[in-house]
Length: 299
Image (cartoon, rainbow, N blue to C red):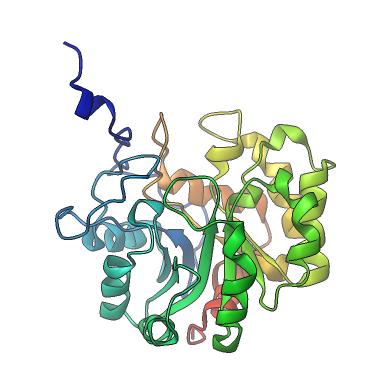
């Protein structure tokens, strides 16, 4: 049976995250933080999705998200405003306010956002804004400088969902930003391009010479090897070797916009291969997120 025009025009529905995950293969330290995940409310009428979205996620509500953190052994988490809500941060902010010691957030706002709204977001636990040029519903590079100057006084950062192959052309602008940058998913470019590619070298430059950060997340988005993603290991190790104090780990749960669903526990276990040294893993999982997001130091 063919779909009706209204159904056919809808952005595709994503797979749901797997309920089970592999057990940890290394000791996860107290205070460990998953710095990249999203929540999606079960009630789409109260929290409508923007029509210009690229995909339609299944519900990934607060309870499921907190359950995922427990299953993966993470004490803390950072929620990133998902593109399908555009600049409507309400659901993420409500979740943050209910868990002020455990959670932080990265929001999405328009350049004309009011100071009052930014201050309210800060009080809720937001510590950065996201630029997203890969999926519909995001805020793009045109707003980068304006937003960076708006948040500099708050001590926030700018987070970029982009293809690192764009970085060489953007470096003159990015070097001048008055706040640090965080790059999602290790640059979100194919690891097949190699660590000597212009995009990867530009990413290294920002991390090494300009105090930027990289999220060691989304290996399945840049790999050609489902589902062990072993081709990402040299890429991740090179980034860690470049600046271990500027690396963060994130699950990227609930793994939207994928044709094959990944195992969240298996993704976490990759960190043992990428960073075999327990002290380095502690920095990536605990110390680095504490500094960037303002968590109370773990005891």
